[in-house]
Image (cartoon, rainbow, N blue to C red):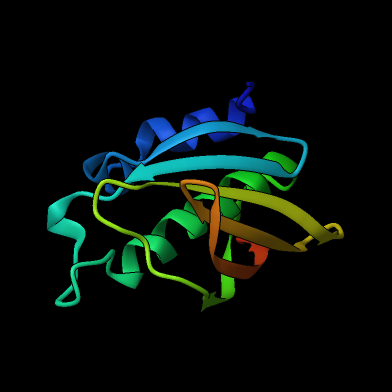
Length: 133
């Protein structure tokens, strides 16, 4: 799969996703896919993936999809609905697809699956950031 050159730059400069073992496998044309293996350190008191990790994965897929169409886009708003738990050892796969885009903003939907099962639905709104002065 291909990764847009601008998205490659962003990923090379980012440390948060790398520290978790998050891996972007594709990002171009307003779509992206990212993966994360749930480690024991990511488990909550119920012994399943803590929801923040699922959100982080979905937000990363969102950001890659958004920036493959609108370089400089950042999350302005996001929500997630958790459908099922993810077990320790599961591979989470987030697939992002652009729902709406104009010249400065976009809406991206992300489905997160664990071993083929849908576990979360994420929707994010992105806006192109103003250049820093």
